[in-house]
Length: 191
Length: 191
DNA sequence: TTCGGGGTAGACAGATTGGTCTACTTGGCT
DNA sequence: AGCCAAGTAGACCAATCTGTCTACCCCGAA
Image 1 (cartoon, rainbow over the protein chains, first blue to last red):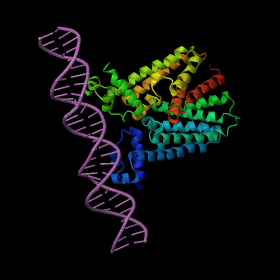
Image 2: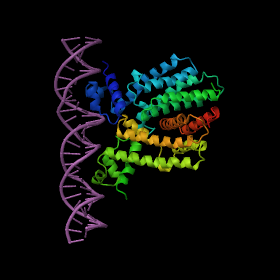
Image 3: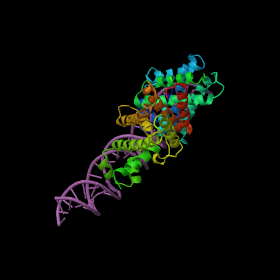
Image 4: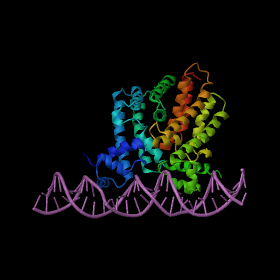
């Protein structure tokens, strides 16, 4: 019954399913069941609401994501678990995240393309946080160098899988990235 | 002076810079300099205009992209050239493609998330065409199997690089994917 | 020479947008 | 008991949205 959280939940669902510009304030109000005055009491504008939605999704996603990493053994198994997580997400086995419709942050950047836009920057921040989680595990690998490179590479594999899964409906995209990581492990003895 | 092409050019520029829902028909008309009647003579709706824009961008991008592949030696060099092309794109050395703002097809799918939507399907088709160009080169490699897997992997590396470059403004994303491809070559002797 | 297709400018319609505001209610703290 | 913050419903505003329509123009083919 948190009157600030209600429109955030509703707005996320509608934004994620239909896009941000395509969803009007009135629809959010109707479906969240709060009054217009209440919404504008908590948020000064649609844009501020969006920022709160990004904040919320960031938190939910990170919590869910880090759960997979922590359940696995630190190091390589944890890195592999990243792609197991993605696989669950793409195949709708992650209830917390709602029906897969791509990455909300990638989608938001598509609508607010300019990197100077606040929403865009908030999305970049989310990706940086994910990168930090990855780095923590990469740093545990028995490598002498190349931690930063490997971290960024894994994140890039993750983005590629998300896009492939969303646009083509390719539900095996996560497993493909996982196999690529394995191939890397075998080839270079970096891990 | 092609009155059908003019609004396509303008609409692409505006859609790409600002998003599709964020751009109104009237703005397209004003900036393309044609009359409303003319637009609705050629296109029955904004959605039909969008489909024509996707068609147009598909053609321009494929032409530009395949140029890089054809200039390189067939096989591995051509595959490396893919990432050289991306690098030029991200760093705005590809004039035909306009200032880099991510992939227009990824961006469009973000706004029309449902895979059953015509615009979304047109985007998937574009990606499939790119995949075909990649496959042609992969098929020339001295591998006994795994062509399909490698083709899809390379496409996924490409999507990852595009997203990373757009969201983080990471202009080295293409080179990172290129290095990963090289690492794969060394490790598995698939090429 | 007439006729029609493609063009122009822009009024217009009806719906919807984000956001403000009035009038009223409810519930908890002092 | 009194008060105020937070809530409700929804009228209202100006702007904007997509799409239609009128009225007129130009030019090439029959």
